Length: 273
Ligand SMILES: Nc1ncnc2c1ncn2[C@@H]1O[C@H](COP(=O)(O)OP(=O)(O)O)[C@@H](O)[C@H]1O
Ligand SMILES: [Mg+2]
Image (cartoon, rainbow, N blue to C red):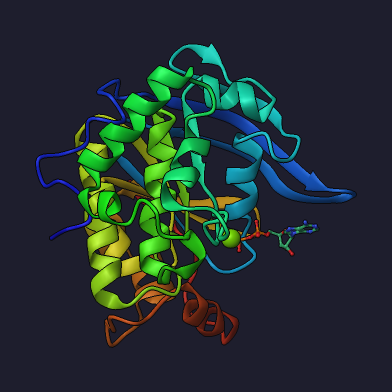
């Protein structure tokens, strides 16, 4: 059995949200990390690529109100709120780096946390729908999340985020540390969530696989977006091929290798698309 229903996801709805961002800035104390990013997250699946330390997590944290942001962010014509709980109410949900489940709580209890903004009856309904959309989780409902494998926990984290009925789902490196088969299933699942109508913004280190499932991508380096475009064009572009995919086109090549190659002086950033 797959982790998700192949028919698609009913939890997220079909709103095909759009986020427009102008001049996004964020800093840790005096250290400016995001240097005025302007970009658009269109309906479908958008991926953000880039080396370790580029500011990808900071971007997601800023858009989810976990750190202060500057600039403008408009979700479907309305300004994105600043406080996290209001951002969740506005329809944005984040699957954070490292999943951050409550390990001493059951799968069901973790899903209940995703439904905090609903009353009890609606929350129960949403969790029942989660067990329909993610059938394997029904079998695991009473298992402590901390006793699951990394891949299984990631599925719980995605389901928890979907319980809050996001119009825009954000994921921070969901494939990190997962076995290749699990990476494929997870990315396939994210693709289906986007197909069902929930807009997705995903940060990924697994460049090749991410571009294979995404509609569009951005490449981020040192707090700036250095390339963007259609995922298929990006995968063929010089900036991504030289910096991220490597000459041998290896399955295991990721952005961390790319930084090392770049530090050895290969590749220059050229916007595409
Ligand atoms: N809590 C923090 N305090 C200070 N600096 C931070 C903090 N988190 C991240 N940084 C710095 O911000 C930069 C971007 O980090 P991050 O957004 O985590 O990058 P990425 O997710 O692309 O690997 C890095 O230089 C990192 O050291
Ligand atoms: Mg990160």
